[in-house]
Image 1 (tube, rainbow, N blue to C red):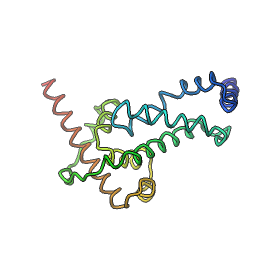
Image 2 (spheres, rainbow, N blue to C red):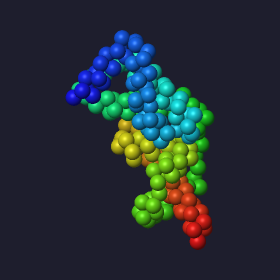
Image 3 (cartoon, rainbow, N blue to C red):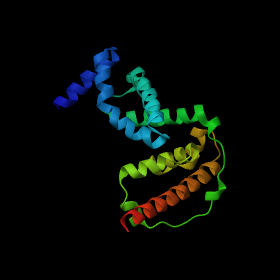
Length: 186
């Protein structure tokens, strides 16, 4: 209960433009926001840019946050939207179809169970941006292909294709990582 009072006081101070409160909010939620931003970015620098854009939107839109609702949930949506905006601003650099990954291979679930969260995030970051953003929006955030198509200004077919290719690229990367680990231990 005391934490809630402090949090709501913090939000009120942020709304008033108090710098110390804004810094505290930023530092308090930075790691959570970065965990989301990293999934959508190619590297840490890109994630930092996405997270900073998100925090700017958060701090300038606190009047839209409804007290009593999950702040983390509200923040998460803003970080995801910042990632989508980042993708849109830079998408001219991302186009290209890679049909070499169009065939599907099945994956054994135990392979993924053996991986750390950090290893999985690194593999997702290595995906080309157009595949990475569709993968994150569909698999992790639960958006339907129609919603993704609308958000990214692509066709539903492109969304489905990008997801399929992303999954195949991830499977191949996981197999390659497993083979490297097997060679190190074997």
